[in-house]
Amino acid sequence: MQNTGDNVFERSLQEKIDCSLERFFDSKDYAESSRRAIRSDLFRFGRWYTSANQEPLDWSRVVTRDIADFREHMVRVEERSISTTNRCLVMVRQVFAWLVSDGQISSSPAKNVKELRRQPLSPKGLSRAEARKLLRESEARQDYRAIALFHVMLYCGVRVSELQFRFTDLDLSERAGWLKILGKGGKQRMVPIPLPARKALAEYIEHRPPVDTEYVFVGERGMLTDRGVRNICRRYSAITGTRIHPHLLRHSYAKRFLEESHDLVSLASLLGHESLETTRRYVQRQQSELAFLNEQVQF
Image 1 (cartoon, rainbow, N blue to C red):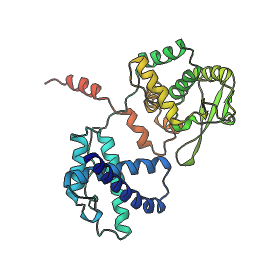
Image 2 (image 1 turned 60 degrees about the horizontal axis):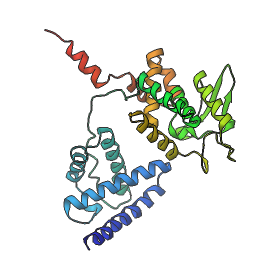
Image 3 (image 1 turned 45 degrees about the vertical axis):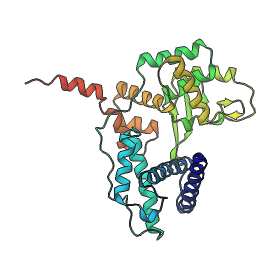
Image 4 (image 1 turned 120 degrees about the vertical axis):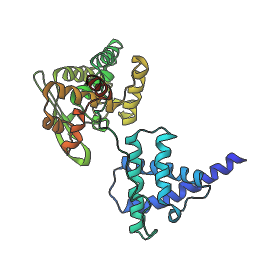
């Protein structure tokens, strides 16, 4: 009986949030992935609010303390990372700012709640040994699609959403290769394809199932989706014993490129970053490196 009541209560919360977000999204130009993230973050806040305050969610009754306590709850209870917590806080703040502009509330309770500070650290990437093991395991299984996917991510640094490219976007030859990418914000860039990735792509295309689609990477029902790529990564996580996800491979590419070239501007162009500040994080030290350097301090 309690579960039924909880389900009804959650549906009511979902309806309230969806109703507000429908108008919010009408006033904004968000990509579908951003809409899903905002909906998820706001629903997380709504569930926390109703549980913590023992009352239905009412935008006009949310106070600054609620936002601050929710931020602390994410870090201390849910053990979310600082970046995830800050992203959620930014999303919630945007919605409350819109509620003010829409006249539903007089002021935003999220306006003065600051994001959490953190020591800037370089994103983690695979070590050379871990990358070698991943490529070796896929090769040992003659998994041509996985081999090509991993090579493109490790050698070209593309986002998971950018793996949905067509044959017309691909220019392959023995001596050179280029990939035309439609990145974030609909911005196009050309990415060179190194020899190992060209070979992996050529071998995959040779063994590619005869699926009637213009997209290079395919699944059982046509174009390989983001979810399909993540499922492949999860499968090889279990095989290698190392947690693999698409963005980790992109990070691995970026770190290896900087180690070899020390060219931040070129890396920003290859990754499709609009700002050098986004790329600059790859030159920050890892926590282990900071600890090692600190141990060298002597008086």
